[in-house]
Image (cartoon, rainbow, N blue to C red; front, side, top):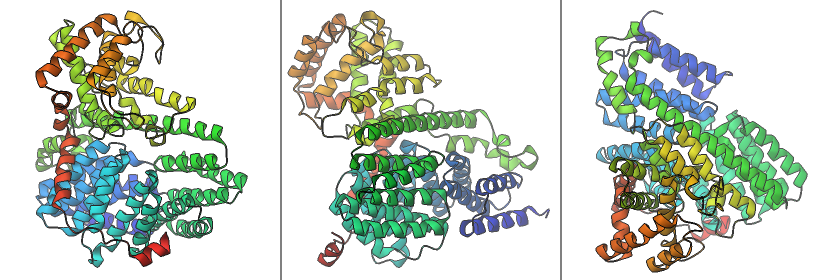
Length: 612
């Protein structure tokens, strides 16, 4: 078959068939499909090519074993959709790209891309697209543990097109995801009621992707029921999950169903049997990374229920290690892809023999439209989203960075170094991306083991930054690693003291402690500025560099006098946060939420009785 148009049509048909009847060697099939696509000139039927790229990206995500392989086809699909000047197709492509970015541990860029997709869906008055995008936005926020934003997005998705039969499946997925947020935030009754609404909207799950979704939904419902000790009902849902897993025929579905079955057995007192089943699922999940987080969380809960706190802590440590590796790998790979797109051209994606002059004109578009944020911004965005688990505004890192720069200037450092320190300080807590939510959001006192997990954020952040190519990478690494060291040597991770602690870290330590003390935490109220400054003076020569503390206290007092009160100073110090891509996206999303649409129909008394 030498006709490129016929080749493209045949490939599209193969991909469509694979969606309903997966090949035994799915990854090999997708790799071959991409290879065939590269040998078909870009000038041939760009619309069909875009559809093929979107299908390939989706199939990589559903398979789950090579998620990053979806990045290139999703990015190319966006590029081609823009060139076609088709807003509806571009909305779909951006939504796919947003989902791929989320699945590859880049929720910040995911939110940014999906916000553009939301704008397009509203310009098109596309209710189906709007529902889909809101659902994807909710997943991106949930991936960053921003559960308030996630729940609001899922609620908006579920409210979209009420009464529209075309949207039943999408609304059902939104409700399922909302219920999963409820599970993570321990709002069990709301989660159960929401899952009942989701189940009432479900249709037949005939395709593998739909069957996988049903398995995951049944898993959420199983865990919610177990949280209320409704073990017999949970066992029924676990059995249904197993039946759909057989239909889905994917490793992800099998893992999820096994976790549900294992948890039920544990709740029935069959601890050894349930934990054995869970551990077998965990072995598989270690090979299918997207499923590992939820599998570990389920097993952690199972070991806690079985009274095995020691093993639960061990799995918490594995979860921390998994998140750290996944985040590190994803950040590095996204940055490498960014640099590659800027430095190389389309001939590295397609053989030069099939590139026409028109194709080569798209080279700059590919760089501009798929490169995302410039190097360094991705890391800042990751630090920002990590911080929002502790500070919903995400402004803490920006306030600390601004204070650190001012202190460095007061200390007489060169202007360029002070500017670099501000950028580096924004990344000081980036290692928190690797700390599990179950530890970061814990409202009761941490155990010694959990505290040790939290303390790993310094080394994790430093190791991640050490691999970056930013001009201020070394300074950022020092700040991330050593901002919890103490002047007297009693800090972590190295226990170094005095001027052995890098200057940037000593400066950031003061700004970090002041800002933390003057803002509310789950375990204490906010301190006044006077109380915080008194605490810093009290700990001079033990925790803090005395020379720097002697500059810092009067600096803050001067700033407070200049701005009138702590709230006004806070706003000025954190102003840069509003310029971040994710902050702007959140503001845009908040405006859209406020604009409204119908609320989700309330749970009826009959429904509540059936579920709760």
